[in-house]
Length: 103
Image (cartoon, rainbow, N blue to C red; front, side, top):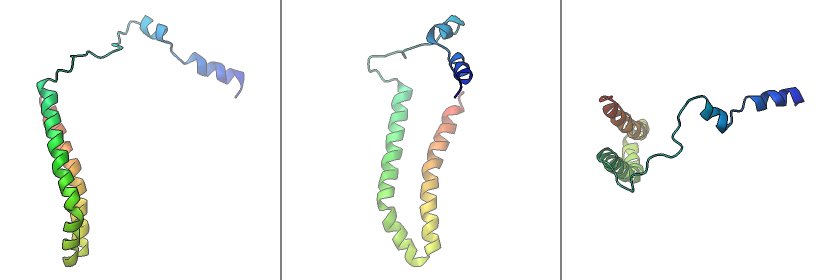
């Protein structure tokens, strides 16, 4: 690297003083609520825990199900595995959509 290239790179860095000097207010630390969880966060935590628990149980039993279905058809066993993975993401996508409808 030449010195001119190095100078251009260092000039593009905005220091903390310059950033606060342009009139943008930034909260450096988020608000702390002394460990109190509000209703929305508690409901989201409970829903995520149930979803993870149910999908964990299903994932534990998925090999047995796929082997049983694989005796009938190997293609169908593959479809069961793909459907499981897609269902995992579908549940969180639908939950996100339902939460954003109010906004």
